[in-house]
Length: 434
Image (tube, rainbow, N blue to C red):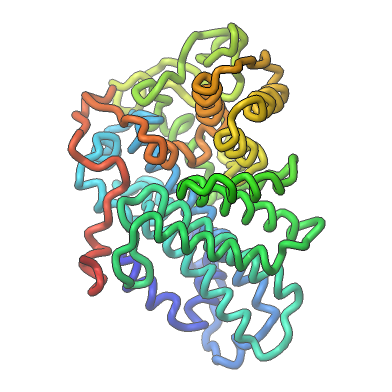
């Protein structure tokens, strides 16, 4: 699949967008399970009642794309180890240039030698969200809850831009020219700006959730851009109980929590200690980090047994306990940790201890700015584990990537950039790609 060329064609007509949204909502189990109309007239699509379906379809595409993108990043950064016999997994953890060929795969195809795409699926989600906005604004009749629906689509589009930009070496959108990650994040910020103009005054329900989501997303983009004042301004407005989730289900692979499925069922992903320690000590059957000797429930695994390759020691994560476990991707805890990172000092100490209170962990105390900053980053590593932030953090903070040999025996190519490589199909299908 070529994200720009095929993606553009996919989104070029209202009919294509509508059919794909229906397919998405059906869970992609089988096209045969979706009752498609025999003939669709353009006039049938000029129907404001379709607006919620279009937006829900875009959300579903984002959720599947996020899950896939996150899984690839866990191997790329050695947050998790290859424990399967798949060459694709070895190429990814070994950071081989061939890994760029896998980006156009789908977001979930069980049993495929290309288990996940990490460029194409998020680009499809981005395009679907923006196409939904275009269609809804173009309906001739009024749309119920129009501001909410458009704001929601823009917020998901913003996150797609944000995630791609923070982890790829360079980005291309809609057959456009090469952009730097910073330029991509500026687009993400613009989408969040638009979303907040529409839902920024929401006081409850879905509107309030989208408002919080856009604030966290905009703060995160500005964190990567080094705009500390804007980070604090946005993150400080996030409700202290806010959590936006990637909804998961055990019904079909499209909606599995793939962290649980690949680590705890397929025995294909193992919690790693290559990138940094995740298994300090074994207590009551769990490998865990500790805080002043107290087990930290945020990062736990069991094992070791053997991975499906019968070679890699398998430590199974315990953050997600079923295929249906939702994945937090935008939360008040991340917002607070961003404030702590920017402001430091006793503000950061207070935030660390507020978060530790949720896990009944001992408090942290220090007046040393360097020690406080180091602890903020460690709390971020633990609190946001397996939530899709580690790759971006390693790039942003210049944290060295693993070298040497993986537990599966794969040599890590140290000359490969730490960021994700641009897909070859992207270059071939884009006349503006350099």
